[in-house]
Length: 278
Length: 278
Image 1 (tube, each protein chain N blue to C red):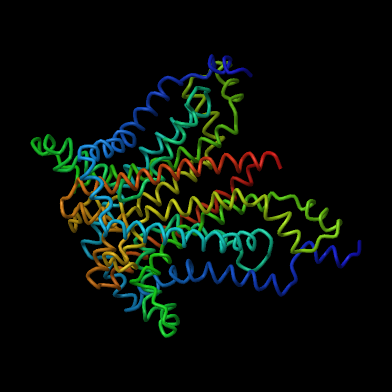
Image 2: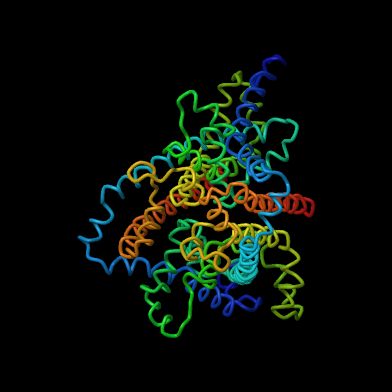
């Protein structure tokens, strides 16, 4: 059916539905978000630069970026492993385990934060085994990585799982018939089609981690220059009524998230094209 | 081609399977299962009596009421928006569609802290509309309307993003047939479209509700943390925790953890039913 025929669709309601969609979207999302950039533009460029490049702010970028990257890498490696085990193997309780993978989407971040802190503190269930070995997790940057790993855990599993399930077993059989061993099949036949999904999951986990607040603030210890994340800095500025400072840092974060969003859209487009061609 | 070689090339040895499964479960265990169990263990540390007492405390009850109220406003609003937006996007062709879909998803890529900040910049005392609101004695920030607004923002895309792909996949043939046979727009929607997408709709609502009840960062920025009046359940958890009242904090947190488990169970049930219908 041509585009023109669809435009003259017999289905009613396009005008009002589109009108309401644009109205509500502008009211709740677009106007408030653009107001932030306009507010940031109210301060002078020099003032803006001084705020967003202050040593304490730079330290928070380093921690936020570094910990998000580390967490997304952990999730990429172990998420791929979990997706593999959940699609290829059978073990008791698999359905429940599979359902629980989505826990970080459903569990409020504050609950995750206090639970992780209690488990990873010096006398916690896991912390008490790490502490004697000199590994301090709670109230250190390592704690930030643990919280961000929790928050980003489902992304890689859930992007890789469907691709892995759709992989044609016949390809593996063909490779086996041609004399490939298991390692060669995994490396040459199974892993390549997973790459776009794996990268998408990694990017989604990374993007989610960058903005995360609730689960981190309990376990981080929030020491300036050491374990203070950028979103917390925005809150601190707000609490000191430094609206210009909070807005400046927020607009840097927003710009970073929008760039990542573009990258993720590109990745998803690539992965859809790869999936379609295969 | 010999049998044993092919078998070996198509799967891992039993020992390796066990090791991989164990590693995946260890990863999910230290990041998901142990912290989840810790919530309940800590909540019940001083016995069931202390647990119940923490939940029946007036401030806790007020927080529960506010959270229920917030979700009762935010979820229906975003449900209506999601359905209307999906109708406009999935049943009609127009230029700029993918841009519109990206804009609807925007709140997911914004840090929760910034989601709260944008409303403070608009409606706060130092915000654009703040002085006007103050003169007319309207309170939005540090009051219930601000909490509802921030919650609507963070849960904005849930229903729409669940429905759009589903309704696009179902095409427009059935609706066109209904309209040609003389059904009105609303009749077509309720008799034809809705039955086709009811599971997807329910799925979106479940996830939207979980996030609405559990949102922490965005609500924390706009709430002002006034006990008994602008304190939601996640914020109440934070207050109790910061007062070192761990048993009460985890008791209230366990309510949210149970909500998360119910959400995951409902999600799995909907996925199962959706599979059955197909």
